[in-house]
Length: 148
Image (cartoon, rainbow, N blue to C red; front, side, top):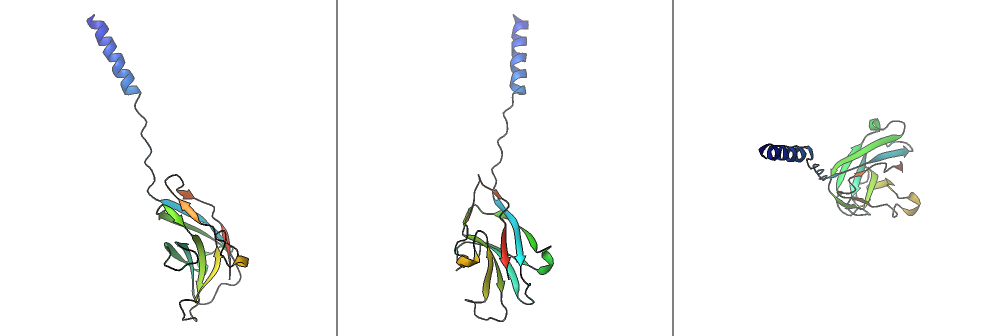
């Protein structure tokens, strides 16, 4: 009886340790948005080119995130971009603009030259919004063009 009890306990312990629960994946805390911008036209000799994730469209407030693009960052007219650690939410647009240093009016000196999902024919009013969440935390291939 004693041997049977020891054998039963040993079997239960073996099964319990062999069948560990799978650890749940840690949910992501932020998102990544990436793609490629294809530029056309002549790069401006002055001013700054910006890439921005916009909270509103048309941009009437500061963008969620922004970075500058220099001509040396562009290879074969293409620029690969990536925004990391993006807070979950919906963003109105991803845009490329050129800041004209000769125009001192802040209402008119930022020229939109490209928007993800938007067309110049519609004055970029047809921009696509982007939503990132715990379920959709990596958006890749958000490619678009920008024309100077």
